Image (cartoon, rainbow, N blue to C red; front, side):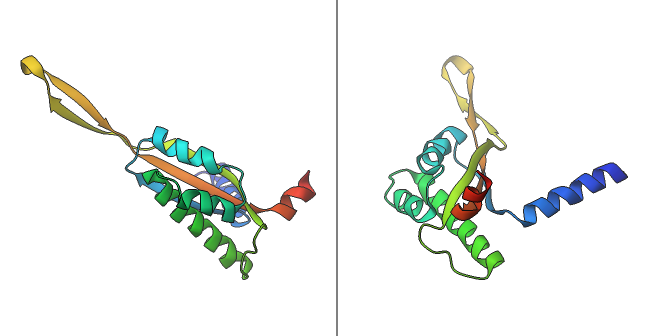
Length: 136
């Protein structure tokens, strides 16, 4: 690896040390279905978002709830204290496409229809409200 790439990679790693996040990779749900759930909680306070996800009927909500609990635990681990109610919020949450499994389904007259089994990656960042207020 060249010096320029190594320096920029080190800067990226240092920036991630100050952020609190969790990633969920290769979820066997289509990104479109996952985005419906993610849009419900984007920008919310974390404990309110946990309540919304707990009572959602979507299957993807269970996975996002577990991911949010992981991000909260990461924040608590780095700060060495428990998160208080109203302190944390979801600063950024994104759903990206992952690999697509391509399968064939028999169709009439000797043809085959392609089935695309999509999957996705979810990245969730949490942040404190006081940190956000000082920046604005």
